[in-house]
Image (cartoon, each protein chain N blue to C red):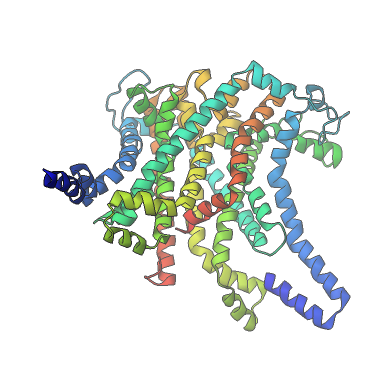
Length: 299
Length: 318
C-alpha cells in the first residue's frame, strides 16, 4: 500500500501533472485517513460519553430535546462531589491501589527470580519449567474462581484484600516471567562470564549486572501487572464481601448501581475516576507498554 | 599474635561464610529462585484447578462439605436448557466477536502500518479501550445502550430520522446478544491491531519489492505475502483471543447479568450465578469444568499454528 503510493508520488514528481498528485492525495485520504478517523472516533466515543456524562447536571442528562446531548451547557462537579464525599469511593481507590501495588511487587520479585533461573542458571528441564509457566497463562480466571473461593476461605483470607494480593500473581507471574525471559535473553552472557571470572557470586551477578540491564523489561512487566491487577474483576467480586474492602470496578457495579433509577452521572463519574489512574500511568510509559505487549506476543 | 590477627581476615576473605557459599551452590540457588513463582502458582493455580475438577464431581454447597456424586452434576447440566443456552451463546459470542475483532483489527493494523504524522500518539490512543478497566467501559456501554436515553437511539431517531422509535438494545434476547458482542469487539480491536501491527513490521519490504517487480497486484501481495507471513502471529493472538473471549465474564456481568430471561448467559456468568451467588459450588464448578474441552481445542489450534511457523522458517529459528 505504502509502496504504491510512494511510487505514484515519484511518477507524479517526474511528470508533474497536478491532477495526478491530487488524485493520489484523495486516494490516500479515502483509503487511510477516513477509515482511521472512523476507528478513532468509535474507539474513543465511549470515553467521551463517559466524561461528558460525569459533568452534566441531571436535568440535561435526561433531556435531549432542549440540550444538545453532545455538549454540556452548564457543567457541574456535583456527581464527583457526591462520589468523593457521600460514598466510600476514596476508600475503594485506596484499596485498589494497595492491591495493585502489592500484587505487582510480589509478582515482579517472583517472576524475576524465576526468569533468571530458567534463562541464566540453565538446568536440566528448564525449558519444561518455562513451558509449564507459559501454560499457566492459558488457564483463565473464570475456571478457577469457584475452587479459589474455597481455598481463600480455608486460608481465612475471605473478604480481605490480602487474598487478592496473593491470588493476582497467578495470572501476572506467567506473563511477567515470559517477558523477562525474553529480556534476559537479549543481555549478552559474556558480561556475566566476566563477573564470574572476577569471583562474583551468582546473586551478586543478578543484583549488580543482570538486573540493572533488565530495567526496561522490569518497567514493562511492572506497568503491565499494575494495569492488569487494577482491572481485575472476577476474583475481587467473588472474594470480597464487605462494602469497604471492595476494589473500584466491583464497588461501582455493586454499591453504586442501586434501585431502578440509575444515577448515571455518579456512575460515569466513578468510571472516569477509576479509569484515570491507569490511563495516566499508561500514558507515562506508553512505549514500554506497547513493547511489552508486542514482545510477549512475538516471544 | 600479629600473625593470627592478620590471617583471620585474610582467611575470611578467601573462605566466604557458609551462607554465601550455599547461595552460590547452583541446585540450591535454582530451587530458591524458582520457589516463589512455583509456590504461588501451585497453591493458587494448580491446586485450585484440581480442586475445581474434584468439586465438579461433588455436591458441595457453601458451608457444607460435599460427597462424591460421580457424573451427577454433568448429567444434570446435559438436561438443563439454561446450560445449553449458555453453551450456545458462548460459542456464538466467541465466533462472531473473534471474527469481528480480527477483521477490524487486521484492517486497523494495515492502516497503522502506513506512514503518517503523529503515528505514535495515535497508536497510544488506540490502545485506550484495552487499558481501561473492562467493567468501567462496560458501564459506559450500558449507558449508551440505555432504553430511554441511548445516544445511538437519539442519533437514529432525532438526528437522522431513520427510525421512529428508540432501539431496545438490552430488552429482548437477540438485540441484547448482539449489543454485548459489539461491546466485546470494541474492547478487543486495540489488542489485535497492536499485536498484528508488530507482526506486520517484521515482514521484510524486499518481499513486496520482489512481488511488485513480478507484477503482483495489491490484493495478491496481501494474499500471498502479508497473510502467510502473518499466519504464526495470527494463530497465537487468535488463541489468546478465543480463550479469553470464551471465558469472558466482566462485560456480560456488568451490562446484562445474563438477562433478559437468561438469554445472554455465558458459561462463566452461569457458573458464577450458580456457584457463588446461588451457593451450589459443585454445580458451578461443573459448569466451569465444562469449559475446559473448548479451551483445550483452542490451545491445540495454537500448537498447530506454532508448528507451522517452525516448518516455514526452519528448525533453527524459533
